[in-house]
Length: 197
Image (cartoon, rainbow, N blue to C red; front, top):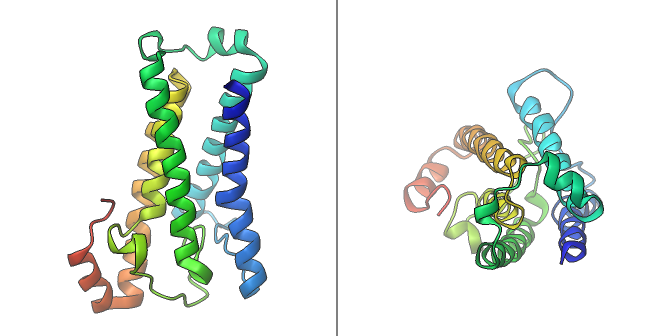
């Protein structure tokens, strides 16, 4: 199961980051990764989130390749290490990845990582976006929680908590941008659709 989890995490990272980035660039000629090098809040969140994702990948790698180091240094939470918690995490992880991929497909050419101030995108309100204003972020939050249930330790707890805070900040930044860009149309959408679910 450790090998399966590691492979699943690798494939998931490719499917939700690398593949959509490549496909969006191929269709539009636009790099969908909008985080840059300027020292502002938007780019800072992007940098920190990359670190969190690298650490999450490292936890699953250490769990597979160095179980002694995992048990010695990552401080597993023993009372959460049981089959019930594990399988809840496994189901949530699979559902969240499928949810994210569907939401990305529904965004089509409008999919971005971060806020794109240089290119006008279509305002998506159908599909999963009709039940959540931020379905991709909802999927990411669920995936982080699932990772904690699968490997309950101090680091995955910190990653889930820090990731949740960063995502909540990013959501509010994106909502402010969309409000400015789509005005009354976005206000109406906000009144009918919840931020997450």
